[in-house]
Amino acid sequence: MFKNKLVLVSPIIAFAVIFIFSLTLFPSVQSQPKNLPIAIVNEDEGVEIPNQPKMNMGQTIVEMIQKSSASTKDKDPTVKWVEVDSIEAVQKGLDNQKYYAALVIPKDFSPKQASLRTSAPSAPEVQIFINQGMNTAASTMAGQVLNGVVDNMNNTVRKQLLDGFEKQGATLTAKQAASLAVPIAKKVTNVNEIGMNSANGNAPVSLFQPLWMASLASAAIIFISISKMPIRTRKENLVTRIGQIIMGAVVALVIGFGITWIADGMVGLNIPNFMDTALFLSITSFSFFLMILAVLSLLGLKGMPIFILMLFFGAPLLAMAPEMMSPFYHDWVYSWLPMRFMVEGLRGFFFFGEGLTWNTPVSVLVWIGLVSMIVILSTALKRNGVKEVVSDSRNI
Image (cartoon, rainbow, N blue to C red; front, side, top):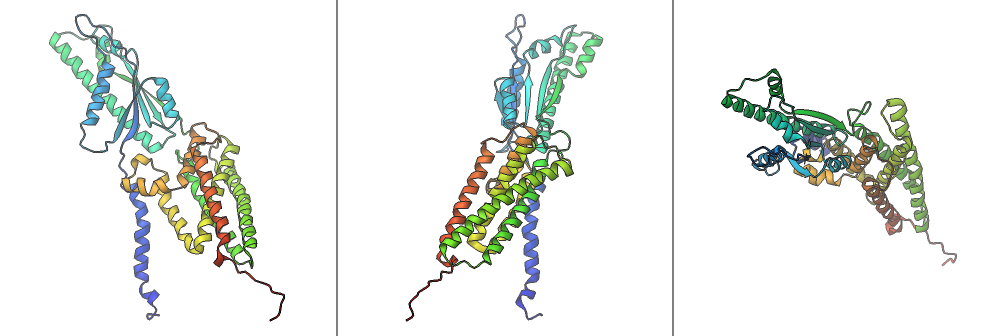
């Protein structure tokens, strides 16, 4: 046994396997958010104060936030503040998954801010929108950032008011004292909510693994079964490849509708639109099936480890927001993962009220399938892929 080289190098192989699969832990352990897009809307119309220039506290707050963000030494700050013109535009951006959260300063912010110095104070209120469906972890973090911004605003305003009252030697009324506790109120609203039975917003990711494994197993079984058949001519080989594609389409329908039925009826996930979700998963499964079969047709079963590694490296990244990944994983791993389009499509179905339309996820998956189909059919023309038998009626 000890003369066998494979036995002797088995510890090295074991360490190599541990090292490779340990790399899958890095994205979740070393996640640092960078450039989280958060919208800010200033609708404050300002207020006229006698013998003073017009005051617009909303604009002052926006400038302070931008100045604070620009003063950071980091090349990529935690938050990327995006100024938006109106609340309608920011709501559209939230629905289009452009922002993880938004801060809206209303029109009457400055007048109410000025009233805090009077005997009839009225606390201004800002609105915070949390885009839950975009990514639960990232939107929660964005909400914490906005809550911190409002808390800092409250501390600043409270100090300014107390200093002003102290200089005037004024006596505070009960209403004024109450307004100083929370000078700026906030109203937090969750939009595109993940709701109940959504695996804490990870329902799109949870469906990936069974679909990927079913597509991988189906492609491998069909490839092995066909490879054992005696094929004598290129024409027979081409017909066989077409048969593989047709069988893959049937399998994809079973996988798409089967996973949707199990997730909805047995697991209890909230599936808003059963038919659209099932058809989308069928398209996804067919695309993955064709991609895997194309690689197997070119490399044989030696191509299987590629897709196993894609599963282990891709699964942790799919649950993360792109802004929380390191540059390496974002640019060189996540950007090349075909399964991210499945998760993006399902996220639109589950949390953003979208239906089955010709959008980016669907179009990319279709193109992956078409290119893979061309590769599969082209392998039928390989000379070494067909055992041609030339029949000659003449005996020489």
